[in-house]
Amino acid sequence: MKILYVFTTAGLQAGSVQNKVIEQIKALRQSGADCKGLFLTIDDAESQNNELYEFIKVPRVPKTWFRSTKQKTAYHKTLYQYFKSHQPKYDFIYCRYPGAGKFIALWTRLKGCKVFFEHLTSEGHEIDIYARENPLKWNLSSILSHIEFRFLPLYQEWRYGKSIRKHAQFGIANSQNIADYENAITGNNYVRLIGGDAVNAQSFSVRKFQAQPGTLKMIFLKGAVTHADFNGLDRLFRGMAAYKGNTKLHLRLYGRNLESEKRQIQEYGIQEMVELNGFIDKEGIDEIMNSVDLGVGALGVHRKGLKSTTTIKAREYFARGLPFFFGHNDPDFSTSATAKNFCLEYEANDTPIDMEHLIHWYSNLEDQQNLPEKMHQFAVENLDYNIKMKRLFEFLKTFDK
Image (tube, rainbow, N blue to C red; front, side):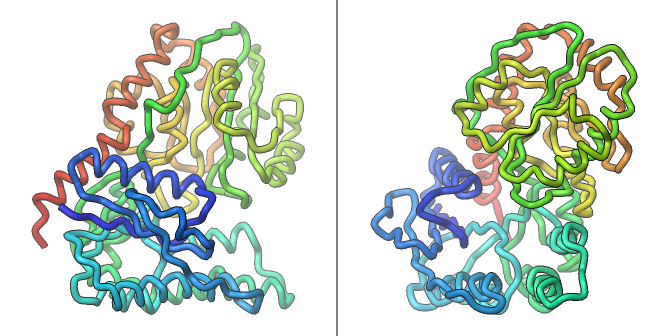
């Protein structure tokens, strides 16, 4: 089976999403598929082509009005023109949903374009987050920004979203919640498989357990450079501010933009409990994981209109062997009795995290000395890219449109 993996926003320097795509390609090849990536980029990267993927050059849009929108259109147009002229022959085309647009709609209608889309969120709700993080102000800059990053994307989804999904072979989604959203757009059973995020479990060092009685040390690694309200850290901040117990609380935050978090920490008066740090690389994280007790997962994905989803962060906690808590349904954890031995799920709402409850749960974890290795093994057996992509590959072999 030949599979072409289309990634529309690649770069010469691979980011976290591109690395995930490469891991998926490797795992599909390991499962038995003849899989290769088609990476669209504005960089001069053709010399970096290899057996796993090839780069396709996209024209770079110069600085102008609505540059971001025009650059996105350039990616989509290049993809459409490439397929129209080259007509590559593949059994399936795997594509992370790139957002709606005219050229994506035209692309799905091309003869032989047997594409299926991976949906990681409910796109309309995701777009609407912009309004919450950037309230509309009556000045030219704010109005133009809302047109470009909110109203135009919402219009594109309304104008082309249904057609794009209708002409695709099918969709896969991170959770049933996302699947329900996508199926409501098409009015049929568009999403055929619940997949979800994965991790290269073997690439992570297993933490060495170091308990320190009387303290609870937590860590959160922020990947987004925006306010990222969907992280829901305000729920934790409010819980820490309300806590009156004897356990000493300490939270380490790492990220490139923590200005919003800094303001909230000051608002709730918990500066002495929280340590703010800049971006840290994987090697640095490996060392820090040996000195913390709990990982903080996503606590606000309901603000995207989701009650259920998967996150890479949670899977990395599993691979490292770090217990954690999170605030939504996760199809890999919520129905697994084994997973629940290692992580604590809170409801997907805005209530503060009950620190007394959290401390009680953590202190009653069984066999803490061997817990990191058990978590890592769970990741290897259930959350690894090889496991997830093998499942997808087996589904593709039986797919009948």
